[in-house]
Length: 81
Image (cartoon, rainbow, N blue to C red):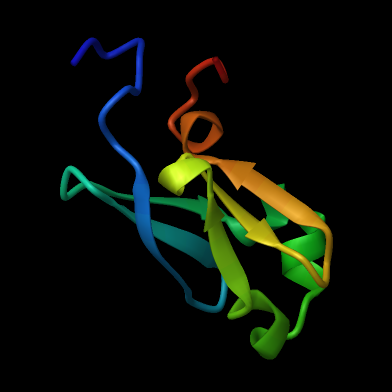
């Protein structure tokens, strides 16, 4: 896999700590980012954060109630194809 393309890694699990979102990927990597990067998630309750669903076969994560979407490519700093 090229470092510039994400064709094989997909989100499998999502969890949070007090300051970060953590995403476990299908290729065994785990990536995280500050909640401050995602104001809707930062303002959401713990219960709302737990109501995520995978979209695009794991290419992204969606939270219906707070109208938030995050792509794996975006978290990896890659262009969304």
